[in-house]
Length: 130
Image (cartoon, rainbow, N blue to C red; front, side, top):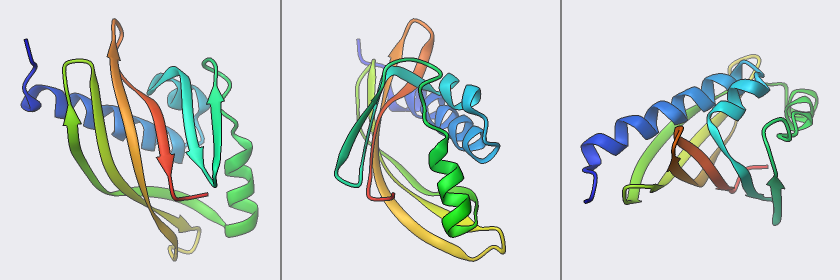
């Protein structure tokens, strides 16, 4: 049986909202709660695999703060482009902002969310952002 989009989409959007809130709060445990593991991130031509909760490298945010004065990020667009009962593909974009409110950049991404016995979580991210 196929779960309708009207059921899947709100659950996935909550995961994405929770992830962004945790990211902006610099909350590694909160980010972990929104992710499934092993987690894959593709960016800057590199593939990173985070094998378990607690392995998400928070030094990326230290670098963003030091180099770009990053203060927070916001979703621009989140489009559910493909899904079934246990997997959803989101084409999305987000904006990174400096501490003075100016824009660092807008980045296109593809996120893959999966559902397991605990619920939906982000399994993989492929981004054109650093």
